[in-house]
Image (cartoon, rainbow, N blue to C red; front, side, top):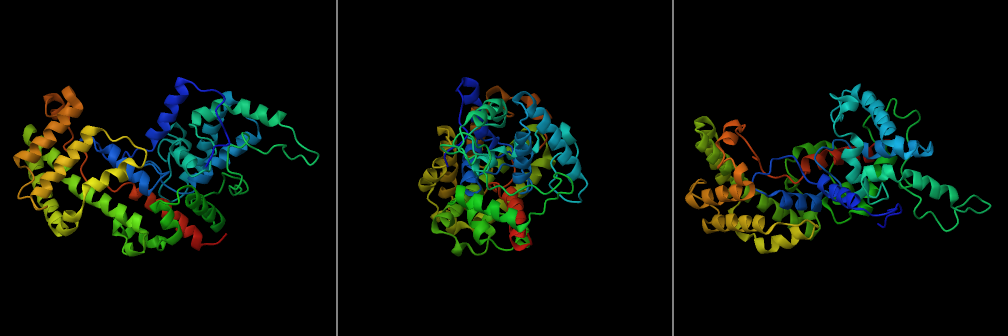
Length: 407
C-alpha cells in the first residue's frame, strides 16, 4: 500500500532510522551464536509479518492508534508529542496492570519501561497498514508540525471536503474502530467483534499470502492454539495453500537440522570449560535430537536445500554468504549420514561449529577467549526455531476469540 504520509526531506539519520524499522522485525527470542538469525527472521516474516518477539496481545494494535489520534486531534506539537504519548501510555499501563491477565507490557517497570508498547508495535502498525507512513515513530513525531500546517492550508469546498483528496494528510487508517468511551479507563484485552474483524481485514489486505492471514481466515478455535507447539503441528495442513504447506515443510526441516548445531555448540563449550554436568546434559539432548531426526528421515531426505534459498531470500533479507555456506555444509554432513548420525560431536560437525563461531566473533569467541568462557551461563541459543509462532499464536488467539464473540 502506498504511503499517504510522506517524507518532508531525506537525511542520513532518516535512512538509518528506516533501517531500524527492519531491525525491529528481527526475532530476538534466542541467542544467535552461529549467525543464523537472518535466515530465521526471513522465515518468520514469511509466515507472520508485522510481528516481533516483544509483542503480546492483539489489542495493542488499536491502543496505540487511539492514543496518537487523540493527541493529533489536540494538535500536540512535535516538541511535546513524545512526552505526552509516554504519559498516555503510562496511564494505559496502570489500567492494564489492574487486570488479572497475561501480556501487560510494563507491568513491572510502568512508564519507565525501556520500550513502550507503541515502539514495540510500531513495525506491525506500519506493516499492516494501520499507520499510513513508511517511517519510524521518532520520524513521525518530528514531522507532526508540518503535517498540521499542511492540513490547515489545504483548500476545502463549501461542504468542508478537502479539495484534491487527503493524500499526504492521513497518518492513521480512517477505518480504525473508535476508541471506547473514556479510554483508557476500564479497557482490557478482549477484542469486541468489530475490532477483531478490523484486524482480520487489515491482515488479509496487507499480508494476504502469509500464514498469519490464512489463520485469521481459516484458523481453528482459539482455545486450541495453545496445543500447537509449532505452526507445523497444525493437523489440517492439507487445507493450506500449496505454497504455505511447502514453505512450512522447508522451515521445519531447517529448524530440525540446525537445532543440532546449537546443541553441539553448547556441548563443546561445556567440555572446553570443564563443566561435566553440562556436557552430560547436552550429550543426552543430542541423543534425543538424533532420535527425532531418525523419526523424520524420509521427510528430511526428500528436502532439497537448493530450493530453500529462494524462499529465504524472497523475503527481502540479505543472507550473508558465510551463513549460507555453514548451513549447506552442516546439512551435507547430515545428508551423508543418511540423517542418522552416530554421534553429534564427531570431528566434522565439531569443526564446522567451532570454525563458524570463531569466524563470527574473532577475539570475542568463547572458544578463543577463556574469560568469556568462564562467565558463560552454560546455555546459548538452544532450542528449535519456531519462527515467531509463540508470538503469533497469542495474537491470533485474541483475534479468533473476538471473531466468535459479541460486538
